[in-house]
Amino acid sequence: MVFSEPVFLFMFLPVALLLYYAVPFRFKNAVLFLTGLLFYAWGEPVYVLIMILSTLIDYCAGRVMDKFDSNKSIRKVALIVSVVMNLSLLGVFKYSGFFVESINSVFGNVMNNPNLPLPIGISFFTFQSMSYTIDLYRRNIKVQKNFINFAAFVTMFPQIVAGPIVLYDDVARELENRKIDIDSISNGISVFICGLCKKVLIANSVGELWTTVKASDYSTLPAATAWLGIIAFTLQIYFDFSGYSDMAIGMGKMLGFNFPKNFDYPYISKTVSEFWRRWHMTLGGWFKSYVYFPLGGSRNGKFRTIRNLLIVWFLTGMWHGASWNFIIWGVYYGIILILEKFVFAKVIDKLPAAVTRTYTLLMVVIGWVIFEISSPAAELEFIGSMFGASGAFFDISTLNMLHNYAVIIIVAAVVASGIPMKICKKFFANNKLGAVQIAGEAVGMATCIAYLVDASYNPFLYFNF
Image 1 (cartoon, rainbow, N blue to C red):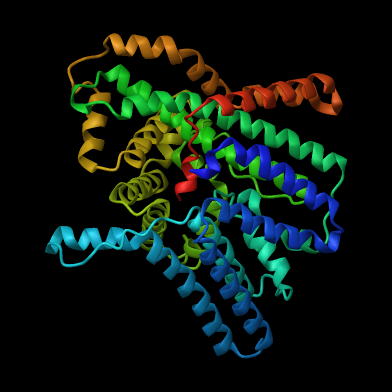
Image 2: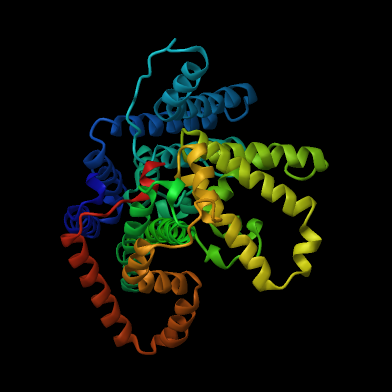
């Protein structure tokens, strides 16, 4: 994938930033718009038209709502057009093949599968753009009359393909007037390098272990190997996605924008509910604001709360991919959250933190098995191997994996705990050891560049969503 190539970092970003800094402020949003289109077209030459279409639909819907501000019917029609068109783009390009395959599996080959390639990041930019018209209909924000400004919001290259999901209200003021100075650029560079190191040095390293285990025969997989593999994926997906989010947030700061936080050390959570308050926070916020609360949230009794939670988590699973494993994964979490809320809340509150954290990690790790392995039968087989169904605890390949990956797994686990960041904040507060920080960032950046130049394994997992 083009976005994974080193040229993505070494050529596009510096040129885009230099051009952005060079032009007067009144042209900066135009540069963001054009560089966003170029960035996306670099990886999706044809499907950039889909992003432009989504942008035009929502911009026009917003202008119609503003022009007919006193006409509730017209405003509602404009909102419906925006929502239906955006969801239709998602439906056609992300889910049409899945629905055709599902129908054919029941009734035979009665329909041809269109096999449309999935536009990178379509779930991110359609949700982001659509939220603008919904908030405008609710009168939570003011209309953006300048098309370039609105298009810059939708196509902003740092987070266009993998989030965080930025709502219009998050950046409305900064689109018109933002501060770009040495401090924001310096802070942005630090956050960017931190995210790059998480992605390149940790996620890629542990991901190679999971790739090996995933390709194994699950029926004969030793329990220790299965655990090593899924722990590797548990760490990979966190560092991959949170690393990219940090890179996007860092680049946003370099551009003068403050994107919302997307991760808050989710693996230290004491409950699954807390985990989802810390993981992919912008997606959780989107579903709360635009699905859960409009359905009634938890205001209308236990039955409707359970219904609303199941709907939200079914849709969360669907958002991640057009496959049954994602739907099962979403429902799995919906059921756990319902049980935590209505059945086990008092019990969990009384248990020691070590016990609840262990329980939460176990539920999350099993969830990642469901998420990552597409076949439900293979998922059950893998989970069975984790708990000894293969009849073997370890073998020589397990020992080799431990020898090759134990250090990086331990390092990743410690970093995921948040302890190193607390230490860094303590030492670097008030510019203490500032030279050490700069030197560390320089070494980290150089190491990442060397790794990217030499490595062939460099996937961005959430580009697929």
